[in-house]
Amino acid sequence: MSFVSHSLLSRRSFLAVAAAGVLAPAETPAAQPPAFIPGIHLHSVDVELKRDFEGTLRRLAEMGYRHVELADLHGKSAAAWGKALKAAGLSALSAHYAVHTLQYDFDTTLDFAREIGLKYMVCAYPRASNGVCPSFEEWKWNAGFLNTIGFLTARAGIRFGYHNHAIEFIRTPAGRGRFRTGFDELIEGTDPKLVTFQLDCGWAAAARLDPAQLLADHKARFTLLHVRDVAPVQKTNPAQPFRTTAVGQGALDWKAILTAAHASGVQETFVALEPGPADALALLQQSAAFLIRTRYE
Image 1 (cartoon, rainbow, N blue to C red):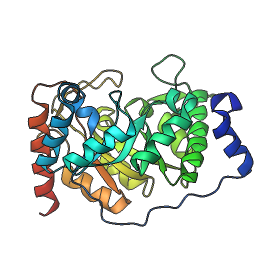
Image 2 (image 1 turned 90 degrees about the vertical axis):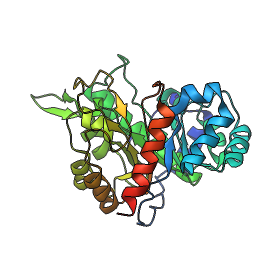
Image 3 (image 1 turned 60 degrees about the horizontal axis):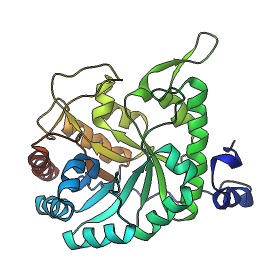
Image 4 (image 1 turned 180 degrees about the vertical axis):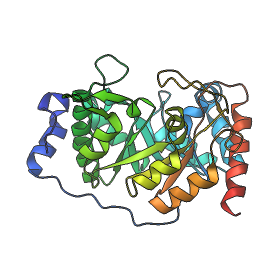
């Protein structure tokens, strides 16, 4: 298995890979019923957190959310995050990171993750030379990069994952008249012991795919789930944004998705909205109520 070059990681991280010689397997979490609720991806409330950091966290806890996935750190240290989350009755299980952060500032990033007690670190988007969608060869590079970072986080006891949008499902020329998707390359090019996946249901649906079928087709590869519902009438161009709505009020079949998630080994779920709507907190409260109710039906 190929690794990214020394220049792509800090010296400390590179030496950790080089010294190991071979990839050490990471422990795979034991299959357990997924905790469908309550988890929330905090990118959903970026606007609200900038306006009232501690107050927004308290509001989320009052809705029934108990763990969070970090995105924008809002300039706060791990200690500051930990204090605020504890005061609100929340805990951080996961966080999203850009490729360039993992590539050029990995050691600081890992130190933050360990201090705050993350179980998962997730790559939020692939590297692409055009800034939008990787070529076939770039998808292969991304797969190798994910393996490398997954190896390094495993040594720290943290599971590493990859979060999809819609571009992963675009068919890309792969030579000799063949076409492949980025998702094909990532799934087949990563070691399951080192890299898990976070299925974003809304983005998969935007790519005209059935999230429940994806989960069924790739059992044990998806450990994390973004519970993102989409408004019934949506743009279908993968390069365009779509409008999210409260879970249970959109176009997705959550009974089928959550049943498939349970069967495929999903461990943690996070409600996710595209940030910005004035009624974001109301939508998140409706989402929590829907999922809590659905869980026990």
